[in-house]
Image 1 (cartoon, rainbow over the protein chains, first blue to last red):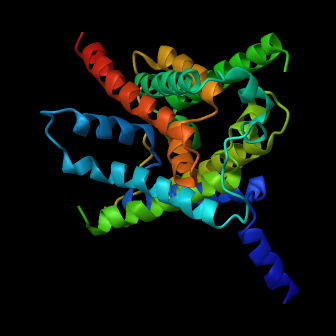
Image 2: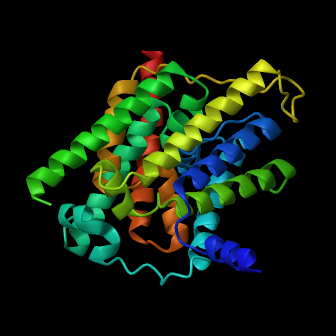
Image 3: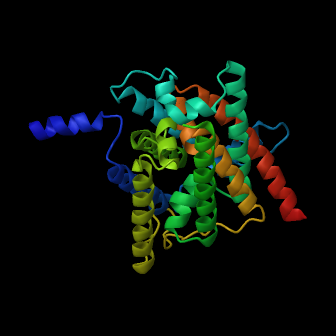
Length: 172
Length: 141
């Protein structure tokens, strides 16, 4: 009975053991390849969605599953938030952490522009690179793709370098 | 459109979003702890996902495991070296470090009620559209 209670508690805890989540993500990504021969992919779905929203673009139903997958991620986040026993997100400094609280502008308008421009860089970068942390790093590197290895190395090197430099300049 | 394939991908996406959240990848604070080497839990998540994924890929290749939908051996798809790969990866790294968000986690965050991610998601959508257009031009030129 105690084991059962422990398992239930673990299921509803907001953070799972890293190695366990990583293994489950690998199994999920592989199941997708096994069932439908399609590696994990996020940013391409964004590109398809952007294409659909542009007037006069012919819709390619073959790519619909990518957008359905993105919709599922939203649903998964909702389920996770409803079952983690933690209070709802308030957007406090503690929730954003020391670094992002110092980095992001304080005003409503300033922060909105910051997030929007950050998103633009992410979307544009992912398309030029041909993938993101899902398609290149989790799926591509696991398949030993040279382009994915290079892209992932640059993602991490630039992100770590930028964050370290910004943290040093901000003194946080 | 509702069909078996789309329902399956809805389930895949839901599981992925749930796992991203339980990993801590949807918390900007935890992303900053990864990038500043203060707490490496996300590094272990990524390393485990990649290592086990590579092992499964090898097993599938070695023993010729077949995909259920095609009946053919599970394909090992190598993404191409795009002309804009390095520039794109640099821009992506800047955006990722600047916001603590990536395309997958932006969506999970929206589901979790982290509303700032709506701005990031809108940016990703517009940026993706622009990126596709540039890719198209690069491939033609």
